[in-house]
Length: 361
Image (cartoon, rainbow, N blue to C red; front, side, top):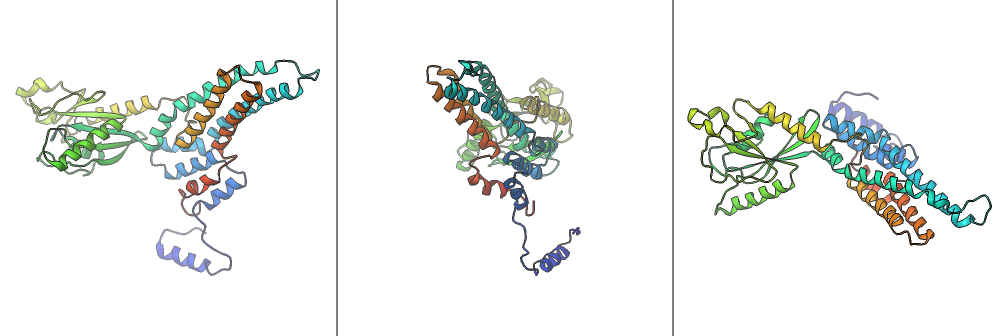
């Protein structure tokens, strides 16, 4: 049935259908769970579908599509097949070494391949942060002294009134957050309390939270008021990009401070905002510079991949171990890869994953 979105019509149809025997509403994610249980989708594809349904930006859509279409699963399965082959070579030497058609030391030929496989897994783990940034957002903190123009800049970039702006120093006491979509990337913008010495207990807590936000941010924009020749606090935040604000209020006597920032802007007139947006896009692209979007983006993936890499490392580095134990390391590594795609040991994850779906998906 194809219905328009009016609530009354949809409710009436659902009430009518509920009158049939053995008819009920589908549970959240029920169809996707059935597809998983019947082997039509694996766990990585299901997670990708959930991310696709929740995607808000173009890059989030592309990342989720790589997983939902099976491209990331194909990478994991290829790794697992290589491990299965390596294990078969070891088992052949262990179990059939007395057979005439099984050459000795056949296992020696597979360790280079195992080493290459470990490097590929380690590269995927290194790309996790890029996947997280695309999926969850690139965190940008606005920092600076009181009345440096942080809240005004947030409102200008968001093109709506997100933060309260007044001439009173210390207006922002808590961290204010908003989301931006710039060139298909999700950017989380955080407006923080002005950094200064104060005896106000509430403001001190706001400043403590500001420093915590600065530490957790992927990029910090340190805003400097171009019209204030002697700001109360003008310490450089390590790694921050300095941005001069209130450029529209500059006059001839203050031109000496016009070069204080990498970019000088005016939230009132919009001058410099395009350059600032380009800078944000360049920074997020630098942080997500990967050859393919078939990369892990969930902590669950990285935990399993790190375990697999550890087992492979144990098999490669301790060559004095009996061949049986090194073969066991490879088996444990392949088990970890199987857990990523949901081939084994997934029951505890299913309720959490499928609860993210809309009803009927």
